[in-house]
Every structure is written in structure tokens, then in C-alpha cells.
Length: 509
Image 1 (cartoon, rainbow, N blue to C red):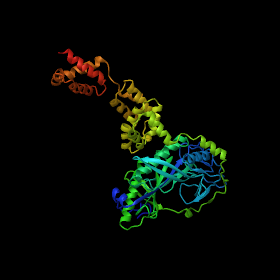
Image 2 (tube, rainbow, N blue to C red):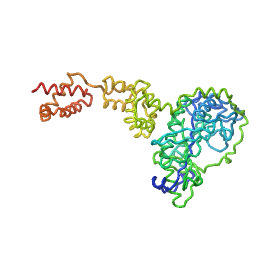
Image 3 (cartoon, rainbow, N blue to C red):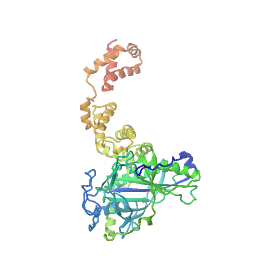
Image 4 (cartoon, rainbow, N blue to C red):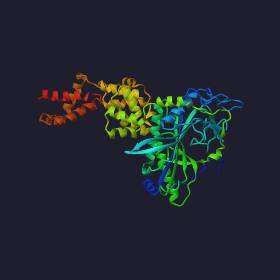
């Protein structure tokens, strides 16, 4: 086998999901990395904009050059405390940074400046609801660290190092401020474990977005999750050996990855095998995980205090000021929106399950009614997102554009069928809703002159239906309306067409 050939992992024997969760008790742990929206990096003044040309946002500090000294970003520290407070955590009176040592090609210093035994926030809790059940997610810690660079493996079929011809490294991301939020073991979820994992990360995303400290765009990697899964014979048994699926960056993938790992662990344990503690990679295209590397224990990282940074000691008055300025808690916000929007409990639960709460809220703020916003985001746009395998917020349409389309419907310029075509054009990159309407000629025809000709043709071609209408079966006129709508490619004003159909039949007696 060549040096670059990808190791072949033996086929995984999976146990069907229902059998797996009835045989074993599932325990999870979730580590969420949040990139902060600061203007500069964690320890230097380099900018943090996403998408810049490779290696243009670097300096001696974030490149780890000899003699370069870090300076802590005050805004990042405040953001970390706000996240911790929003999760009900205690804020450390004093904490410090450490060097986490391990070799990784996109870590220019060969260590990561992080926090180890003294995190800035610890011992919190939050709650999520899945299928009418409330689950408490206990927070172990939320600590500050810096992001690594980004490797690009060129020439292979998988985008990973195995099989690649060569690799490139972009250090723009090195030093971006990160907050890592680590849960305590999540127990008692049973068969709902994948949905609970998804709901927790979705909840965390909305909470962090509400704080205004990150754009939490999963498709850009500014929020990503590491998923720890283990199985044990019963809730009274010791914790099993865990696997850690790294850097999962969509809600849909979080649910699928947890489900797959449960089935994989059950397959190993059911045949007397031993689960290996390791990191694993999630493959969106195939829906499986593959082995990454053996998972180090804390002592393998050789943590020691960072000598170039002094301890962080947040003044208590600062902590209290940040706490008093926190935005509305998610539970209170949900209760308020449920009342304000007039949705049923089931409708609101569907919104939450679809991950649509934030986009609907912004669509309503842009002028659409809650019902209209819910209709588009949980039906047409949700279907488009599922087809593309992305989250709603990653679609190439904004809440403001959805509100604009609905305004055209409310004004009588579009009907729902034409509106769907407008969304199709916007998603295809044809411009704004107004641009798509103009370019495609999508506008309801309500002029009687244009409609009368189409109505007369439908009446002439459907004598039998006309006789039924004349005989008192007015509902039969729907077939004539449908014929006119077809002839006008759905652009006729259906209500006006019905009026004209009945008028023209009455006149022709």
C-alpha cells in the first residue's frame, strides 16, 4: 500500500436503532466550539473577517514566531462571561491560560493557548424540550481558547490527507477567539438521544446569537460540535468507552451522527467486541463515521500554565453588570413569541423542530405576518433546505426577502404558486424578489380584457361542464377555473376568474 493510500476501515456491523436503544443505555457528551465575532484575534490585532485570501490576516503573534508576545482580547473575555452567565454558570474569580501541546500541522506554535483546570465559567445548566419532554443539560465548563489554522488536502477524492498529493495551510483562522462549551454526561435521553443532541445545539445557537457575540454560522464553521457517545448495559452500569465525532457543523448531521454512532457501538458490543476510544470523522455524503486518531487523555496534552499571559481576574462588579444586561432567556422568549404569534403548541413545536424560530422572528420583524412567515419557512423553504442538505439559515434567501415576497402576495401581485417560482429564482441567484418577478414575468393577471378571452375559450371547450353549472352544480365551475389557470400558467387571479366564469355562463343562457 502506498504511503498516501487511505487506510481501509473494516465494514461496520450496525444494530438497528430501535434494537440498540432497547438493549443499551445511551450516554452523550457534547463539546461546542463557538467562534466569537470580535474585530481582532484572541491574542493579537489581526482582523477576523471570514473568506479573506489565504494567509493575509496573520502576524508574528498568531504565526507563533520567536519573541512574539500575546495580548489578551478584552472583548473576547467579556463575551465568554456573557455566554457563561446565559448558561447559568459561575464565573471564576481568577482563571488562567495554559499551553495544550500536541502536534498538528495547522497549529503554527505547535501548542494551543487554551484553559485547562481553571476555566472562566463552570457549573451551569440549561434545558431543551423534545417531543413534549424537558431535558436538563448540565454544563461542565465554558473556557476560552484560540482556533487553529485550516489545512487543505489537494489531489485526493475525500478531501482528507490520505490519498492527497499535497497539503496547503491557511493560517488566517489561527488565533480566532473561541469559546468551548462542554456538557457533563447527558443521561436519560433513551431513544430520543439524537433529537436531544440536535435540540441542545440548536438551543445553544439561538442563545449565543441572542447575546450578539457570534454569528454562529455553522456552514462557515463559526459553530461546530464534537459529539461523544457511549453505551452501557443499564443506567446503573459504569460509563462505557466513548467515541468522539469531531467538527460536525449542521443540526441535521448532529442528529444523524449520534444515531449512527449508537448503531455502530451496539454492533461492536453485541458481538463481544471492544469500543476504541478515538476521534472519528463524519461523512455527510455516506452518513457514516470513520476512524480519526486515538483519543488522548488530558495528561497526553502536557498542559502547563502559559507563562506569557497573566491570570484573568474579572471584577465582581463587571460580572454583575454583564449579568444584569443579559437579553431575554430563551424559555421566556419562546413563551412570549408563542403568545404574540398566536400559534398552537403543535405549530410552535414544529417551528422549533425545524430550527426556524430565528428566521421566522426576523421575517416578522421585516413586515410579514407570523402565519405567513411560518408557512414559507416550515414548508417550501424547509423542503428546499432538505433537498440541499443544509440548514434553513444557510439557504440563499434572507428573512427580509421572504417578507418581500409575502408583501407581493398581500398586494395581489403574486399568488402562492407564483411566489414559489420567485423563491426558486432567488435561490438560483437571479437577484432580489423584484428582479425575479420582472425577469420571469411573474405577475398575476387581473385585467378583465385578458382574462375574458381565456374564460371564453374554457367555456367553449367544456360544454358538458357548462351545462352542469347551468343545472345548479356551481362547484363544477372549479374545473373551468382550473382550465383558465393552466392556460395562463397560473398567473390569473383565480378569484376574479371564477367571477367571470359564472358571469359569462349566465350571459350565454
